[in-house]
Length: 473
Image (cartoon, rainbow, N blue to C red; front, side, top):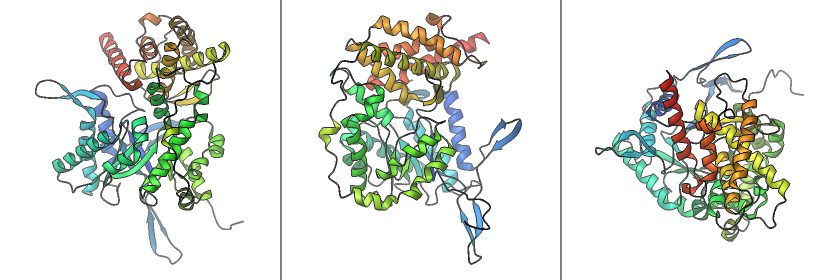
């Protein structure tokens, strides 16, 4: 045993993503201004968050750097904070917080890029109380890009922002979320389109699954959610992301990421399961909490990722034919399995949407039918709503069955949220509940929703809910 050691501090979460996208509910200028303020506070080092735990008051604020003396007695330091990456919204989102001269909405991602860069000027000019990037860069993660042309558009926008702020070329670095089929099939070309900026690629398997279901909407009924990870396309997707990243020279220079662990209360299971990600060649991965980050960091002590990546770089690359193989049912499901999936999906959709629309909460720990808390955001919502829309189109479920099940599950969700004083029940008046009707529309209109995205329905419903609250004041 080691003697004289009081405690061991684990360095974890070397990077952390500040999200403007799937994990937030921001539908207007008021909401977005609050997000922008938080980003500025992080970059300045002034953001604080008071909270109460076990009857005691605390204030969260940025950690200072950690100073210590090495074995020679010389002073050394380690960063006290993760490097902040900022996820902007995708190209499909438009906003009226800024309008053109003739009154038209503008792409929300354009505004995100400008404000993110403006906030980062504090860091680039060393006028804040802390340091984020130690090499003078701004790190923006861009989601939901469909192929190299949209990646090139993002790079062009970043270039214009650099010109506007007088920054050197390629100061703004790009993280590419590989979560749409066209990007997955053309990932190498996407990286080429951002070769001077890219610092990160990531398999966002949750959104990617929603995209996959929507892509093959008309081809046939898809497999159940629990069976999706057994399908050929998803293994090819995960392997190809690593293969392309290594072939493109990411080893030791850029991050290759894997997806989220969606069970924040199941840390033992995460420790047992998530070691597969560094074994698969990942140098980073999404986790739902600081505690999860500390535990996941131990996997990188157990797996020598550079060596593992060298081994993987010698395997045959994943075949695009497997990537394009749709996850369709091989045999018809029995009535019990269909009913189980319908109930589970309806409950998770309602449990997430009601908090998004009525309370403005973008990422929730939503209890499932067994009351196990699962992390839900717009990506998981996209999967559930698209699966039911697919089954509705192919006749596995009827519209009346969906409506009846949603009403039944609304009672369950109401009971699960009964202790929340701000919660507004849906089951007492489902026809008058904005949240209930939005959840139902996500399924009934899921086939025609652009790429299966949930944002448009959610934003419209949230705006109506906010207006209704204002009218009652």
